[in-house]
Each structure stands twice: as C-alpha cells, then as structure tokens.
Image 1 (cartoon, rainbow, N blue to C red):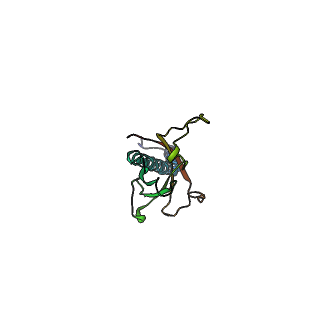
Image 2: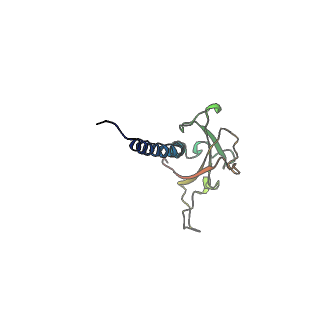
Image 3: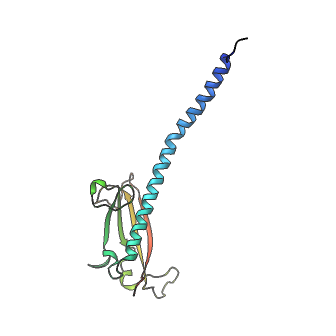
Length: 162
C-alpha cells in the first residue's frame, strides 16, 4: 500500500489555503487604514487635552495669551505626530488654532444655554480648538482644502482661582 495524499486532496488543501491567504491580504489595507485613523484620533485627543489643561492652569485675565491686545485673538500651535507640542516646523504634523468662541465672553462671561436674556456666568469661557493635519503654519482654517479636514472642538474653561 502506498502512503501519501492523492492529487485531489492536495488541490483541495492548496485551494483552501489560497482562499485564506487572499482573504487576509484583502483585509490588510483596511486594517492599516483603521490603524492610521486611530493614531490620528489619539493624537488629536491628546492635543485638545493638552491645550485645555494649559488654558485651565493659566491666568484667568489673559487665558494663556488669548485675551489681551484687543481681545478675541487666536493662537496657532504646532504638534508632532504623537500630539506633542513642537516649535520645529520640520517635525510638525498637526496645526491647532485656539480662539475664544465669542470674544465678548472675555468681559461679559458665558451665556448659559436656554438662558436667553438671563445673566451670563462670568466664571466660564468657551474656547474653540481647531486641529488639522498639516505642516503649514499659515493653514487656512476658515477655508481648508478637501484633503485636509479640520476637526473642531469646543471646551469650557472655568475660573478656578479668585
């Protein structure tokens, strides 16, 4: 009696293996794209958390430089691929613009939702944080190109010290 596999068994085994390999190779680009998107989301979240923390810890009178000369100004900051602040333009992957949602809130305070005509809360300010994947420090946040979408976040900064 001869030992071994018949031609039909070998062809079936190779066919099943090829089907599995092709399926895995087909899913590989999708997995890499999801990994890239997840890394972008994590970096953007880190950027927003870092900016919010810095503003919360800064002086209420200046709010980290947002309030001062003329009020209503904005800051443009650069971040690397990990979401860490950098001053080197060559390392920049993300650009963030930080501004007051309503420049009048620097003097009047924030009007609470649903309180039309009611007094404002002078201990809260809304800050808008816009993050884009770009290395251009002069990035146009108002009219971004289609290839570089801008994520917009709003954060409330509370007055923590008298």
